[in-house]
Amino acid sequence: AKHPVWGDVPDGSYFYFVHSFYARPSDARHSAGETDYGQRFCSAVARDNIFATQFHPEKSADHGLALYRNFLHWNP
Image (cartoon, rainbow, N blue to C red):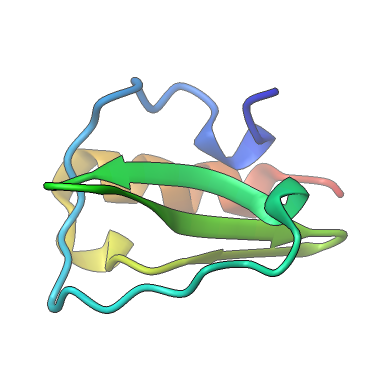
């Protein structure tokens, strides 16, 4: 199921990454988003009241602002 913080952000939206490092969650159920850039990797994790991204929403234009707005209205 799509995490509520993604809200109205369309699948396939572009986000700003600074580097190619990524974390692999020990429990796949905590993966809240994936990116495909030559390979598929986890780019967002969520658990309980935590939602974290590997990319920079603040540098990701309208989709990043939508993600912040959805986070502010999220009630875990």
